[in-house]
Amino acid sequence: MKDDVVAGHSEVNQADAIIMPDVSRAQEIIATKCKAIGPRYGVFLKRTGELLRQNFPRVFQDMTEENLMNFIAVVDISGGPSRGQMKRLQEYCDGCGWCCSQTSRIVVILEDVERISRELKQKREKLFNFDGKDWTIKQGHPCQWWNPDNGRCAIYKIRPFTCRVWPQTTDSKGCYGLQEMPECRYSVSVLAYRVVEAVKAVSAGNNELPA
Ligand code: SF4
Ligand code: SF4
Image 1 (cartoon, rainbow, N blue to C red):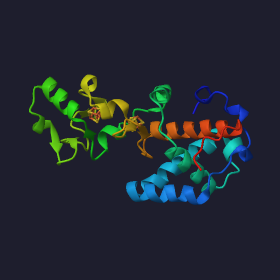
Image 2 (cartoon, helix red, strand yellow; image 1 turned 135 degrees about the horizontal axis):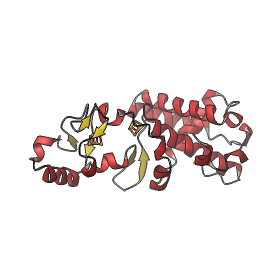
Image 3 (cartoon, helix red, strand yellow; image 1 turned 180 degrees about the horizontal axis):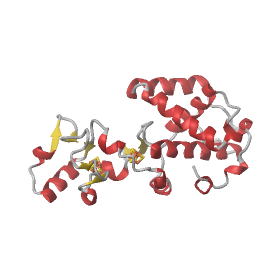
């Protein structure tokens, strides 16, 4: 992470500036997420921790691994990144193509199913699957529209909403969250950014972390 992304981080330079959240609460969060997502969630936290230690050694080098993982997990569930934060951090997408080539199930909204089918003049059943609950891209691993030669999306201008906001997510209430993908540098960087913001808030006496 570059300094300009986390302007003001130099005000926070001591590990003891961090107020640790309730440990059992943090471990509960990690266990719940590991149950839902799998052990990949632990890897995601670990990658975020590595990025933080590497970029902000004065802040994080003295924290135990367990405390750092707990702190990151609590920040992770304390609300999602805003669209503004995502746009500011967009440069951390390294264009690796993992999201288009390795995501096994790309869920899309009905509006996109209808719009893309109309634009491509194809029947929606030819391009998308419906399992009774969700619509998904029919060939999604790799995505049928991903070009492995140049790493580009063949329908970029009309790509689904899921792809336009990735690695951000939205739930049924419109709240933003983050795809916890350890392979995605963008996603890891966004969470690391949010951790630094939380440390700054705690240091300024504004503890926004949930109890
Ligand atoms: S996986 Fe993440 S870093 Fe890679 S191209 Fe997709 S958004 Fe960018
Ligand atoms: S539609 Fe385009 S952006 Fe979305 S997963 Fe496929 S190739 Fe990637």
